[in-house]
Length: 137
Image 1 (cartoon, rainbow, N blue to C red):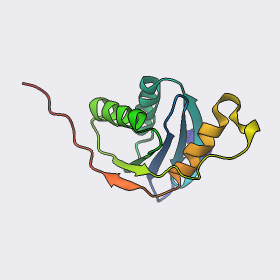
Image 2: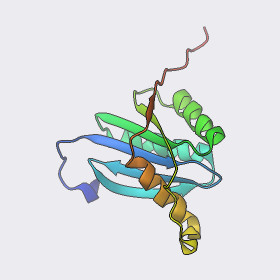
Image 3: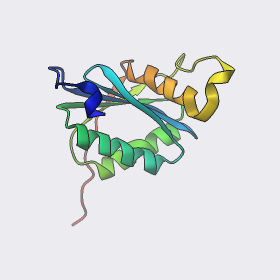
């Protein structure tokens, strides 16, 4: 992914857009450009991939925007990120209304989920506070 960027630009921001569901779409924007998309059938796999991206790209500002359409999956993603990722990041919940393309042919191999994740990444959402879990003594 880093090779696709060329030189390091001034706006050092990573935005991850997540469309939660049984197939969870992920869209990765770095420095204002989309550098990757994927879809995951496991929340654990998704969170591990997101942590690798956030740690590997080393952006100064990290924002995760998650669609609010499936709150059970959204909550699980937030909880796992909070448990596994110790660095700071901003979390925003985004209204998913109108993010899914209305074409039937787009649902091959999670394409619709990835396109929805792209739309979610590009929308501003309601900011949520992310507090690290306290470690029991």
